[in-house]
Amino acid sequence: MGVHFTSFDDEFVVAIPGTHNLVDWLADLSAWPWRFAVVGLCHDGFGKDAEALWAVIKPLLPADKLITFTGHSLGGARAQIFAAYHVAESPRRCRVVTFGAPRVVFFLNRVFARLIAGTLESVFYERRGDIVTDVPPRGFLHPALGVPIGAEVETLDPAVNHSMGRYTLDLDALEKESRHV
Image (cartoon, rainbow, N blue to C red; front, side):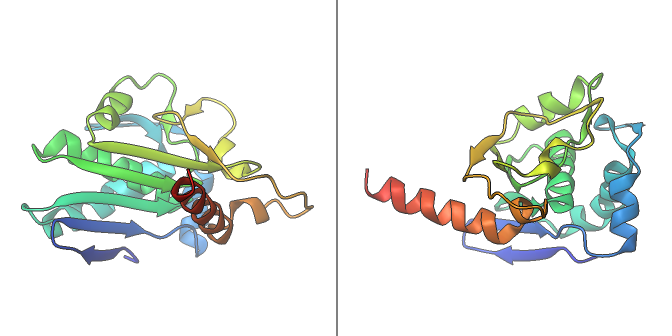
């Protein structure tokens, strides 16, 4: 499954990894709109994968804690879908925080954005120059506005701006900056 769970006093974090094998790459590339009963029209590769994982994850979520879904890249796409399922199926609130997530929602989907708006908090970090946040290029959208961070690194390697390491450095810099304000 690859999903990691961390429990704190009042919070339960579900951390979903990004693309790391051939099956994940096939999910990334299967970019056709597909109607899912609960979350509406979404990227079929992300949606089918997340739907199957949700059936496994849902029973593991504690009823007495705030649930936070988080992930990078494909993990961010899955985290958004998990949060939408959670809002649709549970009276408890959750939050979702993603890093470099690709577009998940097909533009005709009116359900998904309402579900994400039902979270306690939704933060979608997008590094400047990260090409993954702009894919798939046509027909798909992010469920909410992204939070742009960092400065684009000039390089011929497009993956440099997408690395979780760069996101971590940018967030550390933001935290230091906010402490000096």
